[in-house]
Amino acid sequence: MTIARAALAASTPRSGSRDRAVDLVRAACIAGVVMLHAMMVGVAVTGGVPSFVNASDGTWWVVPLSWVLQVMPLFFVIGGFSAATAYRRARERGGDAVGFVAGRVQRLLRPAIVTIGIVGLLLALLASAGVPADLVALAGFRFGQPLWFLGVFLVCQALVPALLRLHERAPYATIAALTIAATGVDVARMQSGIDGLGFLNLAFVWLALQQLGFFLADGRIDALSRRARTIAAIGAVAALAASFVSGIHSPDLVANINPPTTALLLVGVVHTALFSLLREPIARFADRPVVRRVTDFVTPRAMTVYLWHMPVLLGLAGLTAASALWTGMPLPAVDSGLWWLTRPAWLALALAVTAAVVVVAARVEAMTPPPLTSSGRRAGLGVLAGTAAVAMLLVAGTTVITATIAVALLAGALRLARADAPARVEGGQRIVRSLVDRVQVSAHPAP
Image (cartoon, rainbow, N blue to C red; front, top):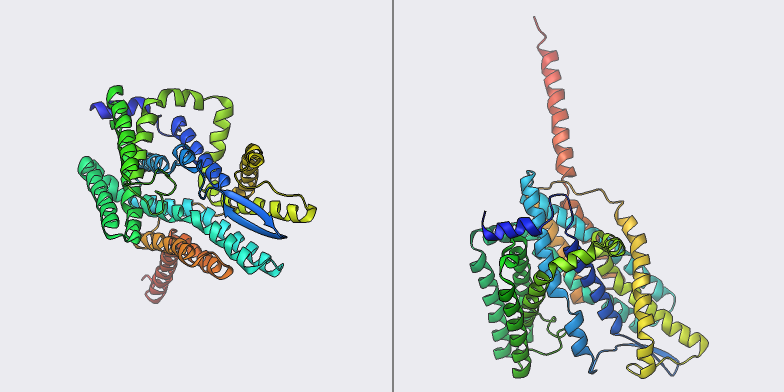
């Protein structure tokens, strides 16, 4: 057994068990996203007219806050770790790539079709209630912004079987190729001044981070000496600092996500090295009863929490504005001392209401039948349909019409990621063959 495999065997739970450290980090990432977006909610009422702004625009605190709460790189690393582990276990049980992709389509898009459908209905209700069209449009825009993650993560997970094969054959060459491609996109964007080129890194940056998760799943990172992992973390931080000082990357890590830049790769290296170094104490902490209950709640509902937190924040912002209009009480100015005093209560309320909504939403999603093995063509079309739905909402905005079209596309994607239609055809063919056999027997009775 190689050193990497030995480390993997020592650090990874047996089949059928959960990796508590990974689950806790995933839950922390989701909570970090909710808190980051909650901090960006700004509500004001001026002259009897409500306005909703990004509270972080032009503020000093967004930079240090982004260093703490920009957890998307770690989320993709953990996603790569979990996907590689799950796919390898599926292969051991006789599963294949098609079944894995079909399962990922079902797991990611079932929560999405519920959320987008209800949001479309709510937008229609707001418009019919006389809410100004610009506020309805703003709500749809704000809801759609975080959906980029759903589309990108779906594509990344769908490519896991192919990229894991490449990783198993040439691990360093594969991640190096993705990293070089991401760097090339950054250079081309900076040299040309065309920011749109940066969106090519929606593929290269996030796939490279997912590939880093494969190394974590192999045990290769845990097999490194503590000195080597510490040097990697310090080196990545130094490279980040140099890129900030030189102007290559913005020190605001939230700005580095739209479009994605190679700064996120360095953040991913820091996060991964620190997770590996602290994995044992994290696992011990995660095994505490209260912490375990939290992670057990979040783990199977991670995508549901992500999808529902923005509608919850928008709803709370709307209720805040309505309350101020109704009572006449002034709202604290964004970034004022009183505004900061209210942030802990605001964050706690956002997390609590999101959790309550998720409990209900998860029950609706659980009513959908579990995924069945699909064909490769159907599963691939399901990924394309799901990605198209998200892309449409991001480009055209979330409206009643686009939400309706997106729901139709997502329903098609979920249908394509199931094999019950071919199964019925095959069943029908068996019935027809049986009837034909009977007719032939009747036409040619035994002597």
